[in-house]
Length: 198
Image (cartoon, rainbow, N blue to C red):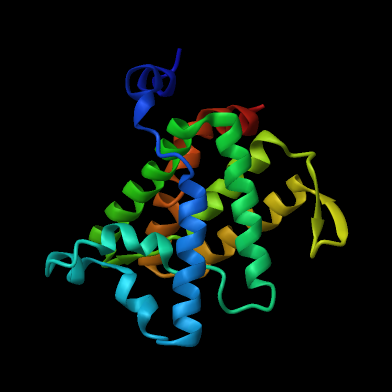
């Protein structure tokens, strides 16, 4: 029995039901506010060390609603995709493990924020995609709702984007990218290491 199993046996009732649904609805709402009312809203909910130390502690949670789906024509499809992935993981893991997975990513973002001054939610959601890909690499999905492909190819593509962002990014970006994967590394880091070694 690993440490996650032990935590679940002891604190399994602390899982947050419909966590991913709430996060995606929050992302959608924040994005609509940014698009329709106030483009500065995203900066008002972002995770900033200076702002948190000044008493704006809501940012420790609201940064999860900072829209990661804006900026592209297919932004809403991206939001729906993460909704689908998150709910699939929740059905397999249960509410407690999904909550723990996200909490580890949030904790990583907090540490990254206080080390570098800021952090964002992108790597946390990307780690969710990596977890799905690790569990179901041969799952067929439709790109743009039309082109079929396997999740493992999307996983490799996302990993390449992550690596480019890591190499090209500044120190704050590097820290955010690594610590944002805390959930994935805690759940599957040992398996990934064994797979790479083999």
